[in-house]
Image 1 (cartoon, one colour):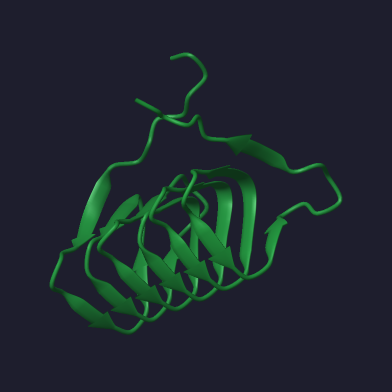
Image 2 (image 1 turned 60 degrees about the vertical axis):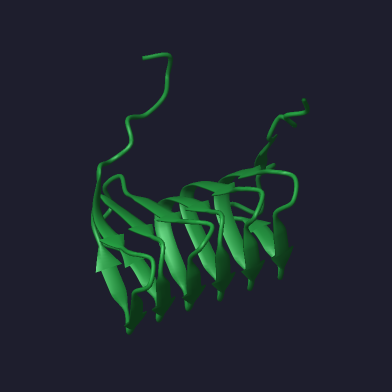
Length: 131
């Protein structure tokens, strides 16, 4: 409805207080509230969603269609559809994206490039919420 794609369900959770050492591969949706020391890669070409919460820490490559970051990522990030950087997002590494939504407060220490560098990037600024 209204032109928005339906999000895949989050079927996997790396809970707060959990540390994974090694590569994580997932389909559909994954939410990380803990720590991952290794790559996080979505399987297949279908729709998938990766949520890296405010308390999460990831050290390694991140690759998924739709990526939402509000925690810390040390390593390259590749979002094949939409990359959402929430206010507490911190990325140390190069970032590639199809479309980007970045909130005030998010930071990137690395190169920020659209996947199709020849085309004009689809960049949307998040609305500032002031009381």
